[in-house]
Image (tube, rainbow, N blue to C red):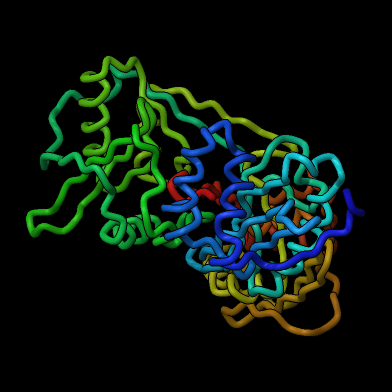
Length: 397
């Protein structure tokens, strides 16, 4: 084999298409090589928000040997929106592994994402790997399990219909209205074609005027996506559970602040939360200044509703790459060029956790070694409270 120098580029949507799909499907062949190849061709990459220009491949010996895929989407932080590079299908050719080629690929890919206009990047990673590229925990993964006895026995009202294909174009605006302020949720549409496996089921119901009112997507006894009134969702799940003799129904990727979570935790259920130091949902800033500029209206809203609503001054935040100064006063929060001042927040990659609201600010600072001066700690409690972030499974990459 040749030297370990890679030739980087973005994959070409025509010339590199089949070779790219092949290396990805071989890497994730535990799903079945041909099954995953079909998904790449028909939904996962083609017909999705996969960003061909922001993704990176590494070539060696005349073939693609590494791939770092980017699925670009708009993500909510409160009611503000940032541009996120969702990283997936991270692949290395089987004959070229254990040569640190992916480390080279990520070293090229991260600034490439920033140059492509992304503010942050999120991924769902294997254990003990992605921290070396600056990713930190985005949020713990929680699964809710509801015993069938807790599910309603009433029939769905209005009646629901079973569909072979989810009506994605109709679903996107309903989802966006229902999740308009949920941090880490994606603005849909993301995938333009359904990526769901063949053994998943979709049930919808409509308003009297014919417009879509809600849906339930299930994979065996797991609710993988939903919208609409919680009681209707649970009636459908109760009907399915009794039909299929399920003893319980599982909810994954259920945002903490949804009406459905509030409904099921008001009854009897159990929650299993998995915290990983490195693995699962992980986040990294790409452009701290750009991120803070975009979420400044949300920061102003939080400030206005706090005991510091009349506070004036500056707050400087520093992550692993940038220092940004916020000017606060007159009901506004803005990014300025200027000295740090006496109120500062200094940290590394964990600053991304403050922005996303991974946990209470004090906990983030204590765990991540973030230091504050002046009123920095008090301002963090107001501007960057815990948000219980979560991305729906149907939007994952």
